[in-house]
Length: 499
Ligand code: NAD
Image (tube, rainbow, N blue to C red; front, side):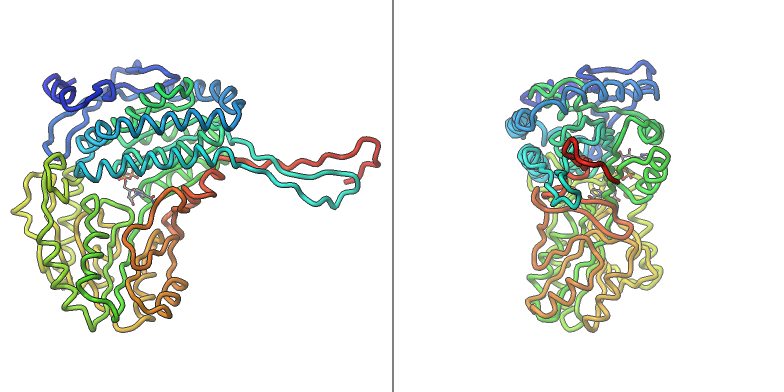
């Protein structure tokens, strides 16, 4: 590994052992035997912050062996015993919050305060599911069969493969892993290659928390190869994926042969609807917050801002003013609002989206890329006059590019908002209760947030409809993704048997 940076990192972290450059399989740190290594870069500076091994297919299969062996013991623990270990993990995440945030900012680029927020958010799922694991109640069923007692038991599905993205490198893992582990499953995490170190720090802390070997594993490697092995493995019973719709479709297809439980948290293209009764300034501040979090690399980002024509011009003025005050820079520096994009290709994609919009008639109100502080940075852009033939309307931009469109009435804006293959989240800003109900019912989205930018948290059933996914994470149903329902019929011995 790069010794210079490794030394820098060890001075930055209170506990340098949280920075691991191995895969974590069966409670052991491993280099794999393929000899393949990949460098991981700080997106803000382009410097190599470390290396990770790429495991071969046989090593991924060996991880399944380990998870299978561990499952026997982990599922046999009482729910309150599993809860205690998960709570110990939660305590360690909290105790090491600052180190975890620094690691995350280094590999992902987001500003340090946002990284701290994500650690807090990610840890909160561990606590939530530790408790939920004690409440996986079955049912008793009034029996239509004479002399029989009927009911259900909830049982862990088995090994779960968890494949996660780079934009939330810690929380997207804990939201899945804590649910699966609380249910009694063992997990194999495949983090994004751009952000493996948050996942590996989670493994280090899981070990310290007394989570037994083989229960929480982290495999690293060529994404398509690793996923192919995990999806083809009959012993892997569930696949939970967060990432792009393109890869989600692929995993669904690959899981068909072994008929796995598949949960998908995919892309979004959120509409942000502003009613005519809104104060344009208040709504513009909210829209800026909903658009530029994580430099726009957020599945909940307000991608299509739909503003009533009566307040459109004032809204645009306030939006541009607030946007101009955003600071772009290295996430480790103070007072930075937007860090870099994850890599150069993301910057290129954003530029294509802006050029396409301008070529098709949108107005570039603000956004000068000559001011970008480095090659992976993209300065916030504001486009008005966005129409449905533009990429900025149809694609998840995953960049700090805001597009505004004026509308005339509620029916028109409902049509506009639903005019996408995605259905993850939508925002409504209005004080008119009739409008709130009308829009909330008509919007084809898994989540609708009214007059609030913040909408997530452990008790929330997070997920989308249409091409945004299958299943829900978090909430009281999140653990069900990792549980089978076993029905039982207890007949009375000696009674006449029937069908
Ligand atoms: P991605 O689909 O490219 O990658 C996600 C994961 O899949 C990574 O671990 C990656 O290594 C792996 N992967 C990539 N190509 C693969 C292949 N061919 N076969 C198997 N695995 C493969 O997505 P990304 O760029 O990392 O993340 C951005 C996407 O994630 C956006 O679309 C965003 O909306 C979505 N996202 C959704 C949610 C949600 O909860 N709905 C949350 C965060 C991000």
